[in-house]
Amino acid sequence: MTRPGPGSDRPRVGLAEIASADTTPVYVISVAAELAGMHPQTLRSYDRMGLVTPGRTSGRGRRYSPRDVLLLREVQRLSQDEGLNLEGIRRVLELQAHVYALQHRVGELQAEVDRLRAEAAAQVAAAHASHRRDLVPVPPASQTVVVWSRR
Figure: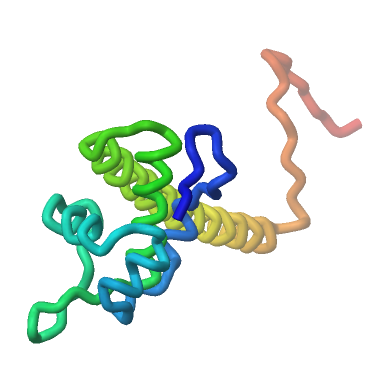
């Protein structure tokens, strides 16, 4: 199998794609290796290093999920196309996961802010609706005294 070199057209795997991928462990190591375009021994090495950790069966056999396969492809891309060493790849994956978690949290907080703004707007509207309409506010005159008398 020929592998593209630096500057290749290998697609980059996005954070959202990896995070939203199915995590059900279904592939044996040989199938996962073929899907990722790697040798099974490479997958074993990555597992030992903690780069991509597959699920395990009761007999301790490795089972890779679609998410694991996407991670393996990203590891391969970072290694071959970007020239990163394995420690650099581990750090990039760690930072990508952190960024995704922060983006998710920002989304949650934005939804909460939107909810609170709508609630505050409803309270302001209710307060305005309860105002008496027969009273008209008059701005205070700046140090002017008006004397009213009956003629």
